[in-house]
Image (tube, rainbow over all chains, first blue to last red; front, side, top):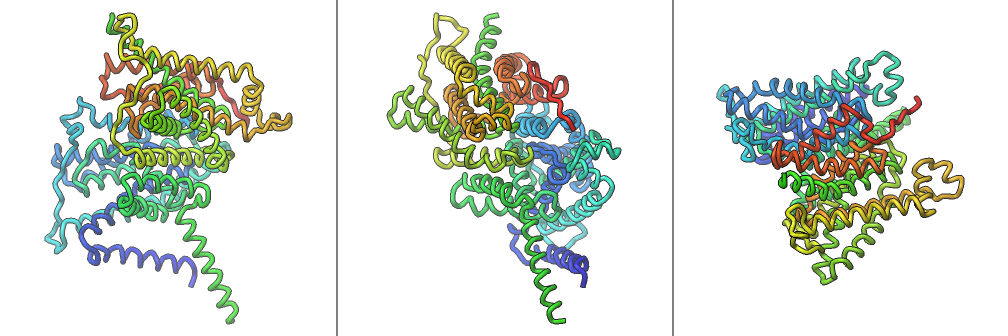
Length: 326
Length: 290
């Protein structure tokens, strides 16, 4: 069989096992895996920006927060159904990402890093701003209701949320995969590899970079909206600088410019703190820091690159063996 | 009027701190074209070292000197061990590595010294000089220390041959190497100096903002704003920018947005500078050939 057939088969198996997962594990684990899917969307969005377009954002937590607050405010004050808040969060984040990116993008990586770093630090303060407390609940945040499974399905609320998030994740990744292998994605990669040559080929670099920033913010914002729905709570202090950095850790661990890497990164940022918490409150972050630096030195393609290397090696060995038999 | 003057003066006092952190950032930027996002957390960690020395019974100024020395050594070691491998890497990896250092210092400080907020002693008397209401002794003293440090750094770079070698290494590494300057070590010394400057700034600001692992987050952002406003490649710009941002922050906090949104002032200053005058007030426009 050809490699692509194997890959498709593997993907189908993976999706099938993802569907069966909540039936096999306990309730809290289901919740954790829901979070993994949500962070995977956010990390994928950030990876479009960092891995595929060669820009950087240290403040994507802000867009996650905007998505989360958009969903929460629409549900709390507008009585919108939870699923309808996702497109709204997407549009709001696309626009805000595009507008934020516009001025900073004409400049280099460092200026963008500085501007987004400041954004990440200012986010909790902005969310606490008293002028908007009627809508945002200031530092108390907003508490939401848990959506129940519709159509009388025989599953509990956590399982339903898992399936809902899984469906959204599949759609988002399918769209993203198509975007990245199409004209837009090729232009993104061209800008990363050689901005001048890309411009000479007729790519409008300023527009494309801001648009990438916007789309990346859109993905992170949709993840934020899902996060608000699943956790049923938004509060300013959860969207601090370290939240933004954990998304960056997800990208670095998963692997720059890989789609599957988003899942590895998301698994890492959901489960490692859980395990490391037992050592000390500070231990997860020490581990994050070490992994961040370690992956940058040794394995910029992250876990995804490692798995690809291992796969290729296995493939070659198997190929050699079957060739020998013949 | 008195209230306004008071705000301006205490703005100048904190501005001095921003100026020193911004200066440390600009020094590293000029030498390597990288921004050290860990600058603030390195300073915070040094301040914790000073705190434990003082708790251990050392007199203030002895602890101060020991800390500055240790910070210098720590900066040199950090450059040699962690930064060296990404010296010529693209900006992205360098940014991510320095974020990694930030995270590690922050969590180590939380791990060893706990996350509880502590008070940090000031070496200056706890009253107001000349019976005035404009400045406290601590503000006056920290301004004095900052200015003394700036003068010392200026003289070091202007009048010593080591300073000259460091400037040469930053400006033209290849030619410097040809005339026998060990460029790698000059960069390490630069990191050491930047860490030492940060340590002084941390110890001067800790009595005001109190000591905890996240104390430098806000200060670092103001320092970024100061460095950008003054021009990211100009040390004088960083100092001028620091004082401007300090006063601006205090006035905006007192009269415009309130203390809740003070960090947003830095964000607005950064984005405003990037939109209106990306090279800053005193910065050189860098034109690169393609």
